[in-house]
Length: 273
Image 1 (spheres, rainbow, N blue to C red):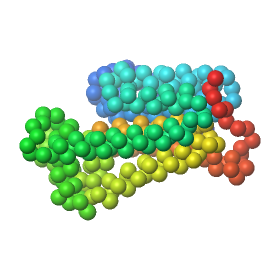
Image 2: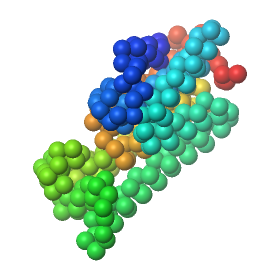
Image 3: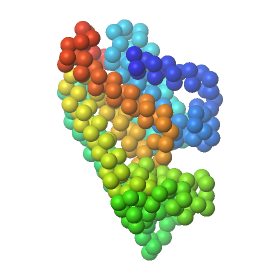
Image 4: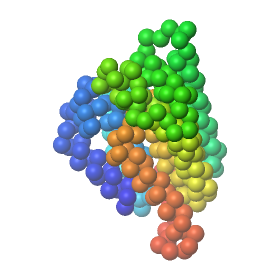
């Protein structure tokens, strides 16, 4: 019921402001930010896929898969490059044979770690005075690294106040990397804790993949949001991580009910075909 509720909710959002959803204008649609709008609809695509996997009716499966395709159009037409790239994770989780699910979740974890390390390395390079840089996003990453280096344990406080770029430009009040911003504001422990939560969720879903076909798309949702959060502040829009948490809870909850023998009278389909 959770994926069905999320799909229905996004369908209502689309019905209310279809023009804003399909606009490539940065300020149109939910949140008034194209990247956040796109990240939300990537999560919506995952919800639709999970609904299709759980549905016992062919009609419901077809409608859900149609919704997944429609939701996937939003990041493509909105001009959000990272959200569009993360759609590959959603597609992969939909067509991946179940026997490869655990390996796929492991690869999702490696992808997240790789992107986090890469963006941090770019930030370190951007923080070097000798390296010329005209990219504001890299500048913000570099400033976040500088703040983190100066205050590794407790952080330097609000990034919008500690960053020289943010102080001069209200549109740059975020580091455009949720993990580096957490580190800059609250120190290395906060950055490590946030990254550990992502890895922990993927580990839980990897174990759940043995019993739940929904675990792989839920892992795709976690990875898509986490990778996107390495290059933008999509985590600041609370509805997006809440969507992701609901999908993870659904996949893990299916395993728990099947393990305890309650409310698990019909196994999930192992394939959409």
